[in-house]
Structure formats: C-alpha cells, structure tokens
Image (cartoon, rainbow, N blue to C red; front, side):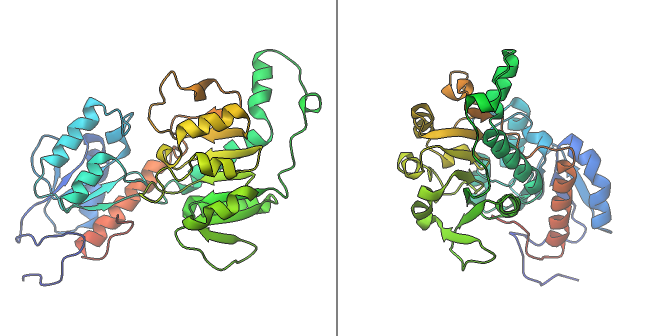
Length: 339
C-alpha cells in the first residue's frame, strides 16, 4: 500500500522493495549494520561504503573525521566528504559532533539535505573538562607544575595566595547541556552564576540570565567568562577586544565552544598585558593551533587540542543518537537536534 503520510526531514517516498542505502565508514558499518537491521525489520537495507555509489542516508562517525579539523582535512576524511557530495539521492546526514560548522555540512544544508547532530552526547564530559580547567587555573596548577618541572619548592604561601572561589562570579555563555551542568556544579562550589543565552529568562534559584545582547552588562562582574555556546552568526567573534576590556582585571577565560567565538589576537593581547589572569582553551581560531602561536608558551594558559569531549563511552552515545533518529526517520517523525 502506498504511504501517503507527509515526508519529514527531507524524506522522499521510496518505491516498494527499494533498498534504503546508508553511507557509513567500514568501521561504523561493521558495528551498526545489525543494530540498523533490528531497528528496521522487513526493510531492505544496504550499507554503502565511500566510493560504492549513491546513498539515501549517511552518518559521519568519529572515525570518519579522525584527526581532521575544519582547516586541515586528511585524505580519509576527504574521501568520505567526496562520497557525500557524489550522492545525489542523499536526504539526511547525522554527524557525531554537537556542532555542525564544518564547510561540508553547510554545503549539504544548502543542497536541501536534512542535518542532525549528536548534541548532548558529550555534554557531561565537556562540562567536566571545563570544570577541570577552571579549577586548575583557580588553584594555580600551571604555576605549580612549572615549579615541579624545575624541581623548585615554591609553596603558594610564598608566591601569592589564590582567591577563594566562593563568592566569585561565573558568566556562562551558552545554556545548553554543557552550560547547565557546569552552572549547577559552580553554584555548589559557592560561585554566583550568570547564564547568557539567546533569550533572557526570569531569575530562578538564584540564577540570573541575560540574552546575548545583554552580555556587556554582566561582563564587568565576571571573574570567570566561560564559553559553551554553538558557533553561529550571532556568536562569531562575540568576545572581541571591547568585550575583553569590559572584564575586571584578573579575570579568567574558559573556552570549550569554538575558537571563532573569540577574537584570538585580542585574547593574546589581553593575556600579555595581564588584564586577563589566565585562560583554559580547548578550541582555537585555526586548528591545529599553529606552532608559532604565542598561546603555546604562555605560563598562564592551559591549551588542549580540541579534546574536551573525548571519552571511551562517547562513541556509544553517538551511535544511540543516530539509531534513535534513524527510527524517527523511518516513522516519519521529527528528527532530534536538527539544524
């Protein structure tokens, strides 16, 4: 019987018995083929590997992007991207990341392909990493580790006591899963938390919220400016030289969002001048971070290679997000975390 239900997520009706072609990496195909078959009993599924031809659906798993970045794409990643471009029947793409700012994704969106992300899959891990960076800076771990490498006994009572965290203010830009979890922990530690989100909301449980347009009003109170927002037209270069100057002297920056949210040259200048006391940075304007970047050698900077969300269980959560949306796609239900 012909299905007359409306299409969802860019889905086109398929002829009875027609194979549903799913573009996956060899690794993901081996792992997910039995799960997808179980989710679609009676359906004719065909796993398509890069270079094997057209596809209706696709999943960019973590192994596809590997060590690639937006700025440096490896040959294996490029092969998968080429397969996406060479699939005229592609209707829906799911990606392993929470962000969808790689050029290939924007290109497919412009082509009318439905795009969904794995938002929330690594929120716990990113929030934990951001907290670790904040605590390391608050407790002067970069200074203490430098002394350890130099085999020098330099107690903090000798070099200047760090401030108590209790009573300080953290401004968290981005109030999704990462921001909310981090905010809850920081409140338990005694910090005042201000959430910056797309739209302001009424204060609740001691939490103040402002919109992006109200960021300037809270920056002068921010001992900690924490960036956990997606990269959008609104957040591109959100933290520029003017915004950094509004922070109180001695403030710290934590960035686990995207490097392009910050004017990196202005950030370096603020760190060099001492206006910013330190920063934990997991993301950068250009990745990999160039070898000649001053950020590598700054004693008050903790720089990690875009690794805040990595953990051994993340792949499983991403697979579950893809399979959940696969079931929704089959049932013509709205897809979760659609861009």
